Each structure stands twice: as C-alpha cells, then as structure tokens.
Length: 176
Length: 336
Image (tube, rainbow over all chains, first blue to last red; front, top):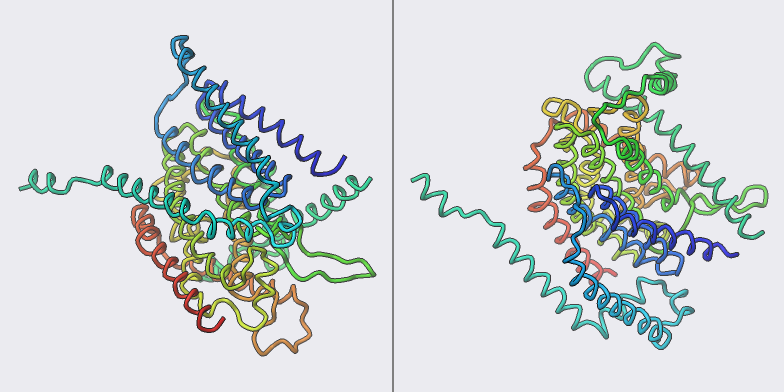
C-alpha cells in the first residue's frame, strides 16, 4: 500500500468518527472539540489528494478562525449543555438534512466529473503548484463571482458594525 | 517496503528535530534567566554546575518529580488534553522550517528540513494559530475564574493579531513569488526582504510578541491581576509544558520564520560572504539575535491593558500591514 492510500484511510475514518462525536456528544465543548478534530482530519484528506493549498487554508480558516468564535461564545455561557432531541424537530430536520445531502452529493460528483476537463491537469498542477493554479482561475475566469463574494462580505461586515455599535447619542442624553 | 523506508526515515528525522528542539528549549530557559538576571542587575542562576550551566537539567528533574495535583472540579480529559494541545502544534511548525540548503556528508544527501511544501508558510501560520486552543481549553477545563478570563483574553488578542500577521506575510511572498520557505530564502541572495518590507517586519514583531504571550502582551497570565492566568490550576510537568511551548519553542520557531522572511535565512551577512562559516551557523546566529531581541523587549517593558492590545491590533497593525502590501507592489513595479 502506498503512503497516500494509508493516509487517506486513516484521515477519513478519523474524520467520520469525529463527525459522529460532533453529533452525539452531550457536553457541547466536547462537540466543538470533535468539530475541530473533524476539520483537521478533512484538511489531512486534502493533503493526501495533493490539494495542499486548500488543506492549509482549511486549518487556518475553518479549524482556527471560525471555530475559535464558537469556542469563545460557548465557553462564556455557563453550563451550556445539550438537551435530548425532541421528536417534533425530526419532522423538519430529516427532509432538510436529506436535501442538503443531495445537494452536496451532486456538487461533489459534478465537481469530480468536471475537474478532469479544465486546462489544469494533474501534470500541470505538479509543475506550477496549487497556488498558481487557483490564482489563475480566480483572477481570470472567476473574477466576477470573486468580486461579488467580497462585496457581499463587505456588506455583512458593515451590517455587523452597525448592529454592534454603541449608541453614543443616548449615553450623552442620559449624562446631560 | 518503500512505505516502510519512507516512514522510518521521516520518523528518525522528526525525532532528531523534536529532541533537538527540547534540548534547545531547555537551554533557552537558562538563556532567558541569565538575560533577565543581568537586565535586573543580579547574576541569575549560578550554583548548579559551572556558572549555572546545569540549571535546566535540575529544573527539568524538579518539575518532573513534583506532585501532579489535579483539582477535583476540573474537566479531567480536557485538563490533560489542553497542555498537549498547546505543546504539539508549536512543535509541528518545525515540520516546515528549513534550516539550510541540502548538503552531502559521506555520500549521503542530507536535507536539513522535514518537508518542503509549496504552502509551507501557510502551514506554519495555521499550526501557530491552532495552539490557541490549548490556552482556551486550559482556561475552560480548569473550571475557575482566573484561568477562564486568561483563556478568553488570549483568544481576543490572537484573533486580532492573526489577521494582521496574515497580511504582513503577503509582502515577502509577493517579492519571492512563492509560499515555500526555501524558495523565499533563495530569492534573497542579493537583497534581504527587510528593505521594502520594513512595515511588515514591525507588524510581525508585534504579532509574535502577542502570539507567544511575551511581556507587553502577556495579558493571558498577567500575574498581578489573574494569579497565573490559564495555568493557575496546573502543577508539575503539565504546568511546565505551557511556558516551554509558548515562550521558548514557539518564540524560537517564529523567530526562525521571521529570519527566513526578512533577513535572508541562511544567506551570510552583507559583505561577510567570504568568511568560512557554514550556512546553518549564519542562520542560527540571526535567529539567536532575534530571540535575544524578544527577551530584551520582554524584560524591559511593562504590560499593556487588554483593550489597548486589541485596539492596537485592529487600528494600527492591520492598516500598517495593508500599507506594506501597497508599498511592496509599487516597489515591484519600479524595481522588479
């Protein structure tokens, strides 16, 4: 067996195990811990498939930048424990979950089928590296979606600042 | 068979790096104590061995043989796990740091690095920031007020400085055209990247101080207000692992990365290339000087308030890092 195959099986089984942990742990801090573990294992999967850039960004953005905010919120709320799920929620969560699963399955299958057709074949990527391949596509063919995404993020950021802002006017009235 | 060979070679290499780092970190504690002593006009450790030279070994024995107290109300699994989660990522950064060019001894080519990925710098950043969980979970698992506040402070500080650090690293990457730390060093043979990237260097210095929790930014353990911060409930070697990971290993490894990014890595000093000094000696001289600089800052300055630190991160460091990208881009257009 090759090293990458071994790595693939180790990472994927650990990722599935941690994902079960996220769902089934009652103590929410353990659930977050398994979430971190699942994300790191997925990044390991990316590495075994030769997508180093996505693997590194996966750790940096998902496992650290995003989950840190979860941890921050959860650990400031005392005695935050999960409750046993009620059956009435399953009526809605099962179909929605199934729909999301279908969408993900479609996207990954379509992506796997499409990925062989572009100009960046595995040999070209071996030569120029992941970063140049991603950057070339991002700043030529997908420039418009990229800019739209950054604009949406900017709008979200301004919205968050407006909501989180302190109302200085009221303070002054209260003092005066 | 090939698999076995790769695994064995990688294991031996990693073990050499890790053991070397452990011994190095032990003696970095002695260096720091001596330095602190002389800053404060006292001799520092003096009695164990000649001029206190065996002090780190005595310290290690003392810490290892201490009684390992675990308070009753802590979350035991996380309490043990947290000390490892602070320590392991700091060691893992070593996997991407190159210490020199490949060289040949007795006909065997030796590469003084574990991997040379083309995303090395990003991985170093990722591993560096993942060690934050050790501190946060240590604070949470201790089930006590002061560690909790310490952990949350660390999280708030790190979120701000990670962003600035990420943007500061863009400058050298733009100039080298690569994320691979080895290629970044090779791109600096004629001129170090400190020349147009001086703003980024300032930002990186602040970020390393914040990320490793050294003094102007050590709000997470601020002895005067928080007893010991997130390590308050820890004893013995579990207590020892936190400063070992943050103050010594992380500071040393991040200094090495800074040297690679801004000071030409293992390239010799300007006008001194004719001296018969091997490349990795140059590298360690530079890393040592930078490490001493951090010690100097640590033992000289008082501590910032936590709101001042986050304000500095978002209102000063982030704009500086962005300005640096702009300056470097113009520099590349004119001279590149």
